[in-house]
Length: 373
Image 1 (cartoon, helix red, strand yellow):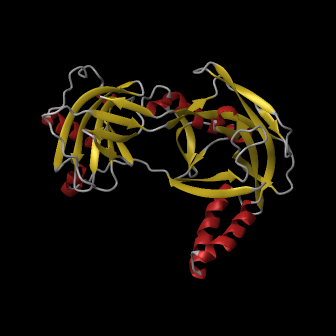
Image 2 (cartoon, one colour):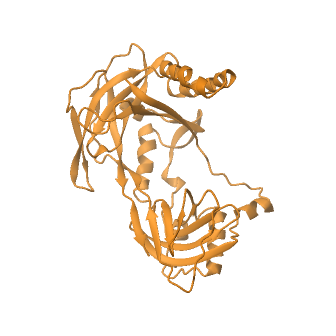
Image 3 (cartoon, helix red, strand yellow):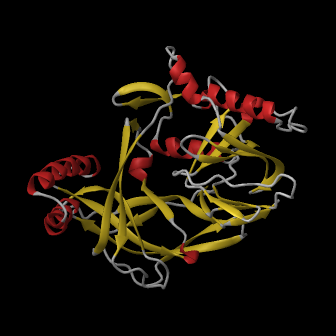
């Protein structure tokens, strides 16, 4: 299989921890102490969710937009089974299938207004590059302090008095750099426009699709399957084009030898190569290949396939996760849609048996939204 790029990503699993030993300097860093502030105090619907645009603030390190909305609280009581974390039994789910599916069921009840990428106020535009949300529940003292600050500044909470505080979210959209804070004439209309960036939402197969027996070969054109989209009330067809072995170790070694001497010294290459191969070992043990499938779908939607073997096995949760993103050399598949590659599992180099796979979920694109308030 010809692959234009195989990119490895490494993501630590960050666990929120409450510190029983907090110093005043740490508490002060958590406080909202803006140098300047423009109270907006406007209610609006974003992604169909009622939200309150609170204010714009200028702090030492950033400008930020603050929004309050009713999200949904999660409960640790929703996960009562046993799983392993680095070999140790913990509270959680029994199979990888449950580990993936159960949070998605909870996501259906969650409410998220998405990412506000821009605000234009009196023809002055602020572009945001990051966001952070603060839930007002157990020990999240930052959210309570921020809410108190905004109430003292004049936040209008009329109509919110009967909302469960545990479901409230204060969302902050920030600029990485600190450009000029807008000069607003409060004697004139604020004339605000919000831009909510496009996004993707995971959609669980419901009802589940039957599993597919996949063999190591190229399939004929229009080797197709379909699933039902209840939102659009239509079937979406997808096509499986092939499944092949991919020697991730050999291909990575070739790429390192070809590309890295241009940008790094020999010592640097040896160090990075060691770290890179340690990471690959977590995905595919040395001496094995990756089983990789190639597919395309109507509307160019991204699909997530898993082997039935993996879904039915017991999960082992680790302190970090490693994955690979593949880009096919041919952008379009044989049926004219975007060509995509999905990694299935490590296999022995001489493995040639069928692999049972399942389409567990897909990604629905949520278009950009422009709101005038």
